[in-house]
Image (cartoon, rainbow, N blue to C red; front, side, top):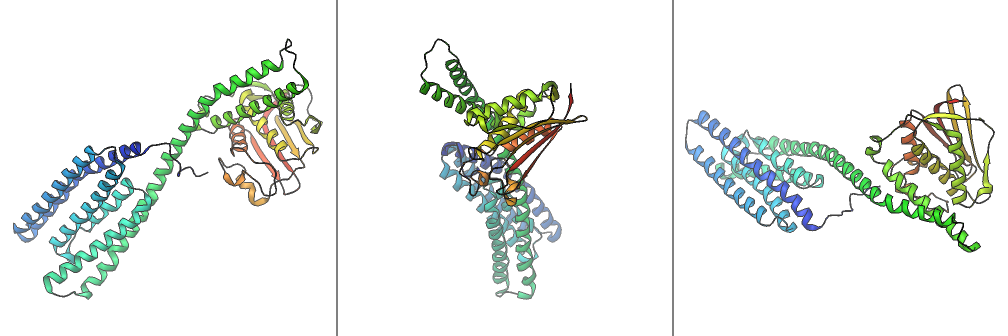
Length: 426
């Protein structure tokens, strides 16, 4: 799911963030104005032994400094005005283009050796705006360079020497476009990393805030269900059972959110001995009760007695709850849900199978995707999916336990999920 078009920030928050970026680039400009100005002055003096060019460069540097001071003052004055900050960003890009063009003109147009100056606004566009602006600024840089060398040719010779200008006119704008693609690629990687970290932090915070009230509601409903002193009518007991199932489902969805973040791995304790047979039985029964389909459960013959695996009972319970919930959601009433536990050597196999609607081959890769919108409603299905986290979280947890989770399915012929883990039979 692409969440980039959603924001929980107000315009003032966005303005403050943009103001920080503007101030960083303004501060950086003090340094590269001095650097490029000093280099240009020294090379001109060494090459021509004339001081007139130094004066011209000094005037350009003074213009750049004065405009940079103005941008700095405006940026500080209107730090919470989004429109003003965007205009300051545009002003910075134009300033870099203008100064680069002036230096290229003074250096002799097509003879200039500081074409790299036009790379500055291209890189700045990636940091100050977004990747979508980089190509436009690269095009503007190429246009500014071409206009500068052609203007210099006209002003100095009265005509344009196309033989001399043809190669620079074509070559350097193409170099700027290539540079823009590189900047786009690098900024996309960094942006995606930042967004992923922000989404994970937000989801973790949201899930933790929701977990307590959801767990409290579930506890209250459980107390009401098992209160022997209360004279519940049959209809009241039925509603309490529905509420219990929905609250249990709510807690499971919140747990999925918590497990979907990288932080969940830091708190993982996977060394407990877990009786997997009991865990499977409880998960199957709870899911059947929640969906009011106790009669559809079928336990296949398999391992008897106690079968233990090393891991976290809480996390494995969430895996099984997700898998059984999926089976019930995507099968009609009366369709059997078969499950079983078997042991071969030191490998424990857990199987959950149904003869439901199944999944088409082209949709199989989507099953393990996090927040996949495409799988929220399968074609031909009467059931709307959840957050798109169930199978993703299940596979993540089983992998963390050193096991494997495989899904076999075909359209109209049901789905089988098999989990294999290290374990022992006692």
